[in-house]
Length: 262
Image (cartoon, rainbow, N blue to C red):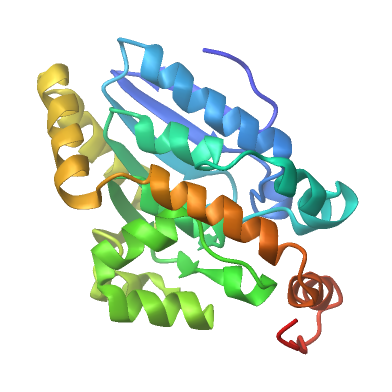
């Protein structure tokens, strides 16, 4: 397997583990990490030895979403994102296109794109320390395909609307109650529980499992490409707004935002 700077990728007993590894900033995603995440899932897709995947984070967080300082401020992220051609986020597409079942072992906060990423998995097993939040609205933005397609399928459109429109952060127990996660376990048992499920799946005929996953995706989640196009086009508008700039500034300055609708 390829060595990455911000992703740890390993395979054992037909189960790949993808571990986000920027624990000092709660596994926040920068451009390189997005690229490595995409590449790691493309590598998994090509590896005949892999039959299932465990996705988790190093340290105290699953993923805290975008690295605001690097993507939206220092790196000129707004300009870069506006230049991206319409389509689904490449890392999201690689995860969603992966035909191996994915178990997200949510070890801590999964917020923003981190929550969306957990939604792209087939299963979510949460530590008691996990929390979930679709924080995009707080930055004047919209969710990715995880929040706009998968979330309402799992929790219903009304509860999804509440999470998306308010940016509310919910506990692991609340996430289980509304059907967002499959189960909540003690933190020390999280990886064991995730691997037990992944290994149980991996023990079955791999081609049948892959076709079953594809069938469920077609019947339940539908095609995400049209939504991906709309999301990228909409973000190119929202990144230019004063409210987006205010959302970022208020976060960095640790103050309440003052949104103007501009």
